[in-house]
Figure 1 (cartoon, rainbow, N blue to C red):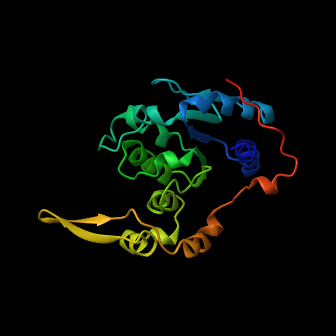
Figure 2 (spheres, rainbow, N blue to C red; figure 1 turned 90 degrees about the vertical axis):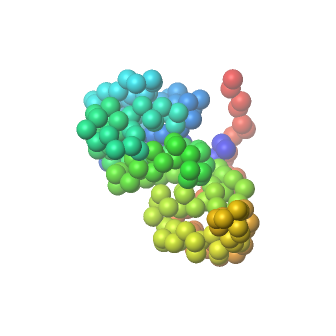
Length: 210
């Protein structure tokens, strides 16, 4: 936190020349994203609220909780309201606090996984890509097309000490462990741009603003 991820990302987005940019973040950070963008660009920004949408903006800032208002994982392709995000043809998606979508069974993760498949460039921002165990990292790696995610079973056995056990008449996987972490770090480093406090020499003191 406080190492300039937002600023770096906005400048990088400008450099890509993307005509439409989708920013997904927690609700509490939407205004901060708007302010930061306005520091570097006079392009039109839409902070999405409720079910209101528009199609004449460059930046669309939306929070995780209302994604369901504009896309559905159900088969509703003929329903305009639930295909809004995909039909906007975004060229770049920025997912802030991306550890929010580490749980692949959560509804917002399912929605976002589908949406991001349709967007050519996807950047994930987080200070904690692996919140507690390697299984949390799997969905983030899958979104950015890491070869490690081509086989879920191989991933959990290699990096999560995964094993099966019986519950009643069915087999269940335990993926709560961790193993071969140095190898996992080495095999994913080409997908990660890491910032550390020691890299930012002129970092100012933190300012806490209620």
